[in-house]
Image 1 (cartoon, rainbow, N blue to C red):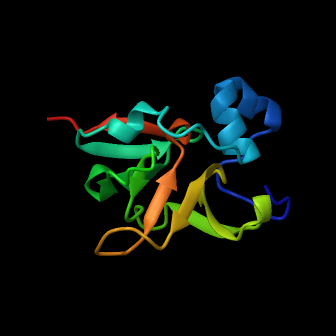
Image 2: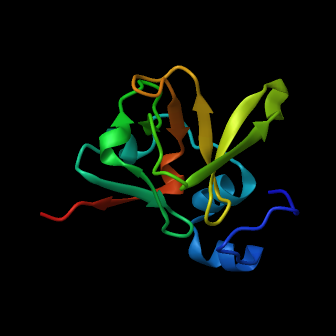
Image 3: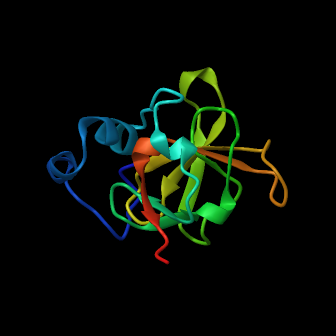
Length: 136
C-alpha cells in the first residue's frame, strides 16, 4: 500500500490481522496471490454479490462473473466506483492492479482479454472476496 493513499475504511495492521485469516491478510494487505484453483468462489454460480473480504463493500455482481478458465474468480465489470486500479511493476512485469476503493485491499489484476461487452477480465483472488447470495 502506498502511504500517501487514504481510503474511507482504515485500520491498523494489527486490526487487519485480527479480522482477516492469515491468507486473506497476505493477499489483501500484502499484495499476495492465492494459488489458482483453490477458491470455491471460482465455481460459485448462484446469483448474488461478491464483496471485499476486508471491509464488506460490494465489488462485483454475479451477472458480471464468467468462467475464464484461469482458476480465479473472473468478472468483466465491477460495480461502478467499487474498485480502483494502479500500475503494478512487480515480478518484472507491468500489470494493472485492482484494489477495493473502500479499504484499499488488494483484490487481483485486470487484463484486456475478457469477454464482451467490456473486453476486460478482472481476475480476482477468491480469498479477497466474500460472496453474499441473493435472497429469494
